[in-house]
Image 1: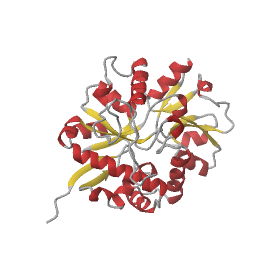
Image 2: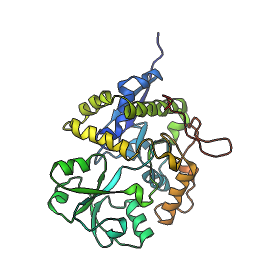
Image 3: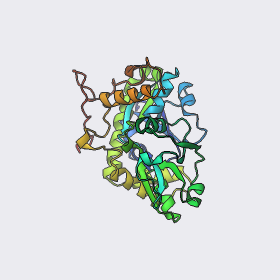
Length: 316
């Protein structure tokens, strides 16, 4: 009889979108099953309580921003980053075309709707010597569409399209261009890493394989699963978001900057930790190895401690 598949529950950071396409592509094509995994993908969104679900064992793996994981570890949560799936963060600021704001420095004194306590706000204020009036996120575009001077945080991959379709002339400031080093990462509970390293490594390998297929092949298998999981998401939004992932090199990164799909760069993660320490968003004594494990990176870290990119499953 065939061996039983190992169950693994993946918690998304928000509702299923094209930004999760690689995971759904791996599920649709049976990549996880080939590796002996039965993966269930759970939607996120406001009130998902991702960290709490992870540390109480209701989910096994989650995805999110690296700065949020550093902050959680600093507060004593037993979680750890084990993989990277986005080299650049898709978060951006939506600005109306006729607004005078052209750079992050122009935000001085302006109201911006964003997540309270967002690390990028502290970073921009500290690095540029400016002050931003923060308006708490309400997860809607109504105020932005109604006020030509309003600025808000969103995804360069989907809110931009939705705002333009509603008639707004929109420009964006990509937060990754502000000097913020945040990545989109895969993380788990330390106990799960200790007890299931083979399953986690298989999950990361097959997820990156799914991302390669999603970005460079036919995305329709993932699109079908995502739309089945997210009522109201249409093909135009999905296809725009996938193209934005390509245009902004969010998944594969910029080779000229030493980035590559799936790469966990120790120096880059250390730079972000140093940034967060400087902003007093994490404890001064927090060490990189307390929040990040490089143990599962096949080819990810050389014997001399240097970082190398993992091989692409398709050879790309």
